[in-house]
Amino acid sequence: MEIINRIPRMISIARELRSEKRRIGFVPTMGALHEGHLELCARAREMCDTVIASVFVNPAQFGPNEDFEKYPRDLARDAELAFTKGVDLIFAPALDDIYPEGFSTYVTVEGLGDRLEGASRPGHFRGVTTVVNKLLNIVSPHFAFFGRKDAQQVILIKRMVRDLAMDVEIVVVPIVREEDGLALSSRNVYLSADERKAALVLKRALDRCRTLYNGGERDCSKLISSMRSVIESEPLARLDYLAITDTARLDALDTIPFDQPTLISLAVFLCDTRLIDNIVLNGEI
Ligand SMILES: Nc1ncnc2c1ncn2[C@@H]1O[C@H](COP(=O)(O)OP(=O)(O)OP(=O)(O)O)[C@@H](O)[C@H]1O
Ligand SMILES: [Mg+2]
Image 1 (cartoon, protein in one colour):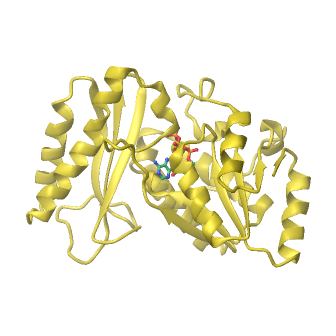
Image 2: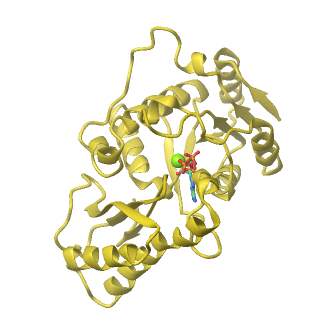
C-alpha cells in the first residue's frame, strides 16, 4: 500500500510488475471515492494481481464555468477507503506533472465526442481521452475499469483503444445505485436534501422508458416525450438532454431496433448540480 506521486516512479513500478508477470488492473478516478468506484476496484481485485487506482482531478475535462475549483478532494480518505478494499497502489500525480509547461498534445475521438455529453460540455471528452491515454501510458495496465454510469465515456475510450491499437482491455462495470435508485456520483454531495429527493427523477424517467419498452413500445419520440413528462413533473429538475441512440455512432434513433444495443441517456440539472444516468436496452455497450 503506497501513494505514488511521481510519474517516473509509477512507470518503474509498472515495468517491474510486468516483468514479474503480474496482471495489472487500473481504475482511473477523480477521487471523492464512493461505492461506484469501489465496485470498479473490486472487479479489478477479482481479475488482476495488482490493483492500481489513480486519483487526479483533471482540469482539461472541466469547462470554464464548471466545478473544477470546488470539486471535492480528500486524498487521505480516498487512500484509506481504497486500501481497505484491496487496492495495492494509488497513483496521485501533481497537476504540472500531467500538464507540464508547454503541454500541447491532445487525443480526440472525432464525432463521438461532440454528441450527448460532448454537446453540452464542449471539450470535455478531449480532456478525458487525453488524460486517460496518458495515465494508461504511465501505468501500462493489462485491464482498465470504467463505470457504465459514464456510458459515452466508455464508448469513446473503447474507440480510442481500438483506433490507436493500445494494449489494454477495457472492462465495463454496471452502475452502482443508492437503495432508492440514484446512481452514485461524487457530485451527489452537492445536493441539498430537497434536491437529493428530486434527483430520483432521472431513474424514474429511465424506469418509465423501460416499462413502456417492455410493454412493446418502440417509437423513440413517444418514449422520449413520456420520459420528458416525468422530468417536467419535478419542479427542481431542469432537463439538459434526453436521447435514444445507438451505441456505435451515438446517432439518434426513430425506432428501437430489436437486434442492436440501444442507449437511453440523460442529463438533468438540480439547481447547479448536473447529474447523468442511462440504461442500455437490447444488450450492453
Ligand atoms: N455509480 C457508479 N457506478 C459505477 N461506476 C461509477 C459510478 N460512478 C462513477 N463511476 C465510475 O468511476 C470512474 C471514475 O469516475 P469519477 O471519478 O468521475 O466519479 P463520478 O462519481 O463519475 O464523479 P462525477 O459525477 O463528479 O464525474 C468512472 O469510470 C465512472 O464511470
Ligand atoms: Mg465522473
